[in-house]
Length: 81
Image (cartoon, rainbow, N blue to C red; front, top):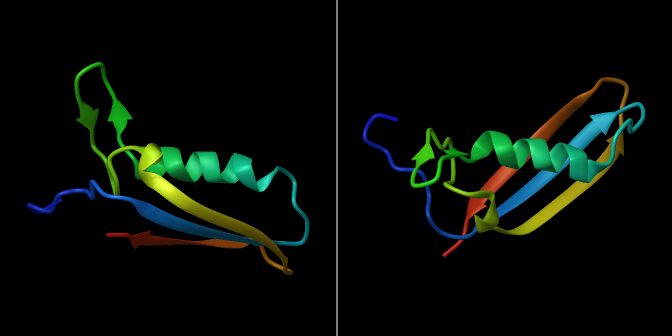
């Protein structure tokens, strides 16, 4: 991470899923996004967090489904003070 530290404070996450139809719930997708952006946890350490250290830091999360011809998604992360 080139001397950059992951964020330790509260986080807002906005997830928008674009597709013809919704095959899973948006919560299922959010869970995967949370697991990807935070680190893997051992008993006494966090290994390779990407954006934030733990998904419990996400204190505000919004998700929405938008019908579209092609499947894609956006994830917006805001660091709160």
